[in-house]
Length: 424
Image (cartoon, rainbow, N blue to C red):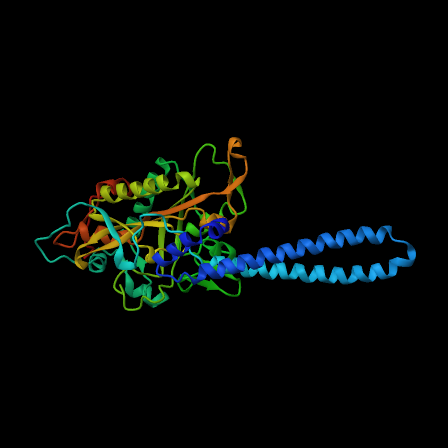
């Protein structure tokens, strides 16, 4: 959630942020009202408690003949204190709910608007051309014995698949390459749980506008994660971190699950938009002052991966209306998919500033010369490899006979294999 002090002191900034996202600023006024009610309830409770304590001392010192009346007054006062305490609890819950409806404050410079209002920051590599009619990734995957959609659908339903043979090896090779790069960059690898509690899913912002994307197990009240960002954010929940030696960086390798609600009819062919996939996710805890520099660093790691895989791509600054509720800024790196004649997102990298950390109570201690108090950390996340990358790799490096060149950086992870050949 946003900083309540910022809400009180600069509500116009918060309203501008909401409007740039295409959201109503009414939520800001509602949160201000709820915050005032909360503080008024706390003041009323504290005044009654003070009166109760003073009355208790009076009862203790009163003559015997006055005690009965004073004790009766004490009982009445006790009931009023209890009612005031309940009022504080209700006001705090209402204030928290109102504050949770306000999304993270958008960083200056983020383009306003919706999905189509992004700004292209840069492109890399010539878009591949062919002197033959290129095949799409599914046709190539079937020729190579790498993708089996038919049996995936038979076993689990639409938008499920098997990666088979070289397809399975290719994904494992890609993930291992990404893991090696993450290790070289100082990330600690984690294999996190893929089922999390509601407070963790809520704390990362995935039970707001994206709740229809999440698989819920009602009997256990647990959620399947759509990205290991969620358990990685929860890893240090309710902790005070030592950031004196720099940021804490983790790389989470996990299977991810998304319902893809609202996407019916979109990308139904192949493995672009599916319900289950693997991903290596970078996650960083750092100070708010260093968050923007860390964001740039994550994008550089992603771009290096795509360059080394020989992919043509662009980097976009995502518009405010297309940000998740937790993100203050997001950069997407999109690779060119030849048969679609379009760039498609392969990585997404978000600076969530202190928004998630406030919800999850993750703090660090300020230096002594700054008072030594604790302050919420900033959190960032970014994809370093995922199943969807196979789409761009197969289509970009295909040859007329249906074989596909293996990018040189992946060959050590595939036993030196240079070309993936059709199995028939």
